[in-house]
Amino acid sequence: MIRRILGATAVALVTTLALSACGGADPLNTAAGSADSATSSGLAGPVVVGSFDFPESVLLASIYAQALRAKGITVEEKPNIGSREVVYDQIKSGGLTVLPEYVGSLLAFVDKNSTARSQREIMAEVRAKLPAELVLLAPSAAEDKNSLSVSRKTADKYGLATMEDLAKVSKNFVVGGPPEFKQRQEENLKTVYGIEFKQWKPTGATTADAIKGGTIQVGNVFTTDPKIVLNDLVPLQDTKNAFGAENVTPLVYRAGVDAEVTSTLDDISAKLDTATLVSLMKRIAVDKDDPPVVAKDWLTQNGLL
Image (cartoon, rainbow, N blue to C red; front, side):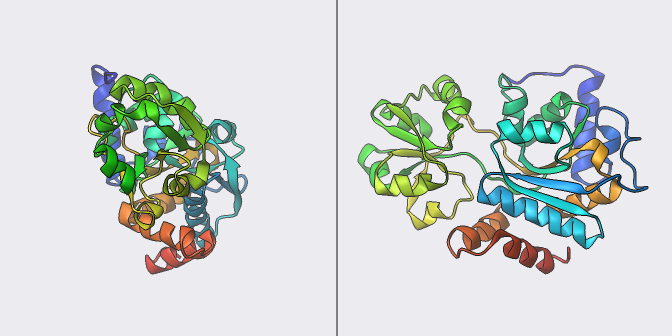
């Protein structure tokens, strides 16, 4: 299922990934295209940091933006822009400079036929398929993966622990998730598990509550959502890896960044892990703290401001 890249190209890609992950190489020099357009001699304009239209992306973008400002870099923020279908074109054209991305979802967007699932496979394929204008930096350990989750009551009633279990009863269930979830995952879930639903319902940020309330039986709840615990939801085990690695990774517009920008973003990625992301999202989703406040607190605690 994995698209293989043969010969010297494969060696180069794996070497690039290994060096970038440990900070041993500048991705501006190892990615496709010339590095001359992005140097440490200065930036032609502000670094524009954008985000998708959900709270975690807004939080991550605020972390990036505040850390860059702390280095004296001029930053403009554009939060809550929209889905990847909208935001990708903006960063590709240079309307955005920095975007917090999720590597598996990015790969699925640039190559809907890819079957890579591990972080290493995904990073290699994304870097090979991105246009020359874009560079994917070193990944963080933090992941926010897709899940299909059900209520505890539904799991107990139907004996659901895995997505394979779900396939046996899914035709009787209504599934909810972000508006683009059906487009991105319907064929994938059918191919990998034979999962087909009675109805697909757009629920967006209210998915976890919709499961608890019973308006849907299954929902695409992201794994860092604190409502998984608060609502006593059961994320079904993805035993066949229908959902690949989703490490949080900065995507940058090559011509708009320099070495200081990339090193600042790499420093953030080196300190960010999944447990941290879950705790930060609890402050936003449950405690109702503002994302910029949460971002500033985390940066301060980690010596990045």
